[in-house]
Image (cartoon, rainbow, N blue to C red; front, side):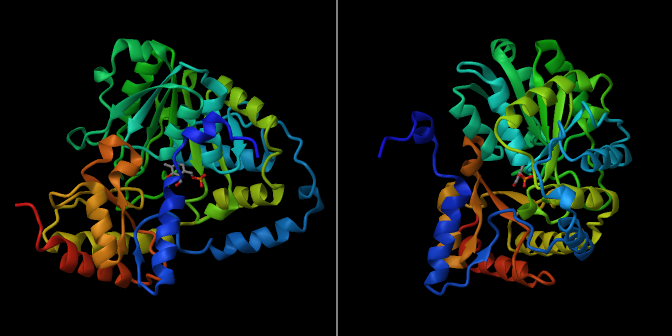
Length: 396
Ligand SMILES: Cc1ncc(COP(=O)(O)O)c(C=O)c1O
């Protein structure tokens, strides 16, 4: 067999594939692992959405290639309505929206659409690992914008060196944040839009968790900033909002040139999502309700944060996302602490370094816990963590 490309050789194994492997091995040995690892909604897609899909599949118009330029028209129109309802921003479905086969696909391909060898890209650190992997495969010159807790896990734009800003073509942000669970105020987007316009950078905003919010918090959008369409492309997903990770559907919206560039690349790669799925997603955007799912996460969030704080940890409940990003409460590294939790407490958490060097000192816990009905599995996880991993070693 010929050797694979250098590009492929340089990428590490996908973080979650590695974690799934270790978990499967331990479970095969009969261990009762509580998985606070991968952020994949454990609740099923709401039944009305599934019922709609059943009849959508029977429509012969959905069985062929979708030859529309930017995706299934009813889906793009529903996305525009949903956007107006949630953010008060008008989008033109013909120029400012693009259907995606999940937002991961779109975020990755946008990098391929813009970055040549040596081009600059500004990435948050820590961040969803997909941005970095594609930036590396494209040979980008990466500037890591560190997200410090002291700054609310927002990048300090004033700390980005002028050379890095001048060279950059793309700057990524992700709020509500994975892995940090942090949220961004609209004033951050005002600054980021100004910064990106000044340096001629496309501001790429990942809003995969826009609908995963608690206690009445409403996620803002960079596109709400005056003149943002000059430089912003935003990515949305139905995965987390409606427990539809397996359906692979999302959309990009915003600057028509960025949408056009991504669309041009995708036209030569995929032939769009199955139209019955896009049609169902349109129905979900118009009628879907995630309040029941959010009640489940909120219960788990409150149970877990309360129990871990009782055990001596010091964790703030997130306003959004289903992640708890917690400082390692001992003198161990992130990886060392996570390994010990897995071995001793049989609880799987992700070491912060999986999301970039600035993740050192943190672990991420996901509230998407399979088999948890009413907070009892997360309570058990907290009990085991307290018993095996914290009490004897807690920092003073
Ligand atoms: C920050 C972030 N963006 C994007 C995605 C991709 O979601 P999807 O491709 O299912 O839309 C994920 C998935 O975990 C994520 O955490």
